[in-house]
Structures are given as C-alpha cells and as structure tokens.
Image (tube, rainbow, N blue to C red):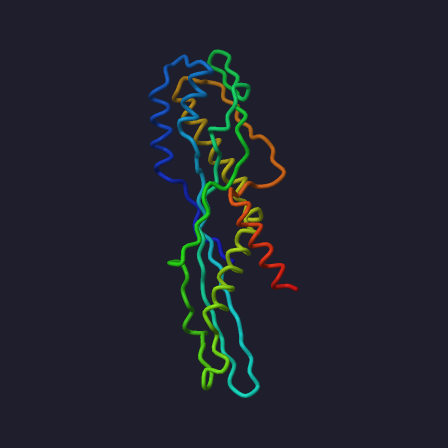
Length: 212
C-alpha cells in the first residue's frame, strides 16, 4: 500500500476565514459555538492511498492466468463541529479553551474510476480460456482491496495529522477573532469512527469467508 498525497482543502480556509470576520473582537461562548457549528464537518486532512491487488489462476493443462490492478481510495479526516457542546468551550476575556470532538473519517471514496489494470504483468486469458480470470473474481479482489485499505486507516497516522492541522487552523482563526490565549484539545475515542460501520462489518464478514 502506498500513501500518495496529504493536503488541506482550500474550502476549509475559506469557511473558517468567514467565521473569523463574522465574529466581533469580544465574542461570547454562544457566538463561538454557533459559528463553529455552522462549519459542520471540518475535513483537515486528505490522503490518497493506492493498493495493488493480484491473483493467479493455476491450471495443469494450460498456462497460468494472472491479474494485477491498482486501486485508489481517497480518505478525508477531520471533526464534526456539530457535536460541540456548550461545556466544551470556556472563555475568559481573550482566553479560550476548546475541547473538540474526536477525529473521524469524514469521507471515504473508492471509485471504480480509480481501478487500473497493470497490463505489464497481467495475462488474463489462458489457452482456450479454461482458466481465465472472470468478472466475479475481479470484483472480489476489488472488495478485498477496499477492506484492506479501510482496516489500515488507523495505522496511517491520519488521526495525529488531522489533529495537528485542526489545531493549527482553529488557532489561526481564533487569534484573528480576538483571542490571545488559545488552548485546543480533543476528546478521546476508543476507535476511529469511519461513519460506515455497517459497510465495514460487511467487508469484515467477506474477508472472514475468504479466509475460511
């Protein structure tokens, strides 16, 4: 598996800059909560991950068939600001302390457009097509690739990166909003919320069937 890109979306900066210019220089807690919640889900990091999937179909009477393909997933992580509670923000003059919701996966995209057959190593059609790799087998491979990427998300360092970027962005914006002392922390979570728990469960059951 290969990590290709990490980036912060420009739309995030635009949204938060609007927040800073719409706050007065002595904002109260209710106003800060309202403005932050209006930003809704804030994605502060985007990873593009590729994974090579492969299979081999052996046949004693014909040559083996091979299939290699590259898949691509885009993963966006951040926080759901709508989960902010009144007690999560404490303001004392120009000093503000915020306890943010845990980092979660805001979006996971695994489009078919990202599937690319690696022609150099692929030989799908054996003699008389007795052991050609069929569509169903390829579909299973693509699902396997998705499951593998999803299961590896927690190991990509995405949580720490998203926390770092979120803290940097909000600190900058809150400072522009009139705060001099800014303290930002995150609530702890036992596991990374992917927002696709049912799909993840189905993929896990699929993997278990393949192993048995």
